[in-house]
Length: 247
Ligand code: SAM
Image (tube, rainbow, N blue to C red; front, top):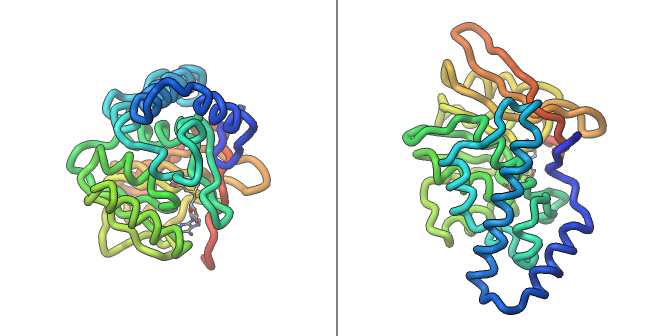
């Protein structure tokens, strides 16, 4: 089994057509129905993958955050049917918005708490940052593609999400001026756990990231910073776009 950040399929189109065919519901009702169905699918995926993740259910605050963030605002080139399908979608520049289940799982694995400061590497559309922003005090998010960083920043501002700071850069090196962080999420795959990110994590803090190769096995991994060194635990086979840059 491999849960995907980058694959999408005819399911997306089917869901879009079905949603369009509903016809009777007004826009808000349609979004609410699709959002509710998506939350059911996320809960089902969590249960199905419990043998890997050890988490048959995701926390109530995480599910509430997933319910509160309007995914269709982050993929505005698609209809709401596609936006609320449990699938990744292209967002331009060869990048994707991750599958909602993976966003929910990564957020849950971070164990976010109110008051925390979190770093995200790979802003993309800004959706994962918005989910995190509903759960913690502040999110610092780094995106290497300037156009994506600019559109995510604009979108977050339009939605009134004021506790996310976005910067353009290579997130492999983190954002040391704003650290140390209570948690770090990396939404693109690299071959190792970036040492600079481990250094910017508080002792006891967790980093959730895919580790592996663009072309072969990748594992969603949770790294915990210890007084000395760190421990890393593989959680689930996944497929993410690569962490790019000069590092
Ligand atoms: N979190 C995003 C969202 O919610 O839409 C999805 C992220 S997408 C799977 C991965 C993102 O990581 C892409 O936008 C890509 O440009 C970005 N990225 C890749 N390498 C990076 C790097 N070295 N530093 C910062 N961002 C990077």
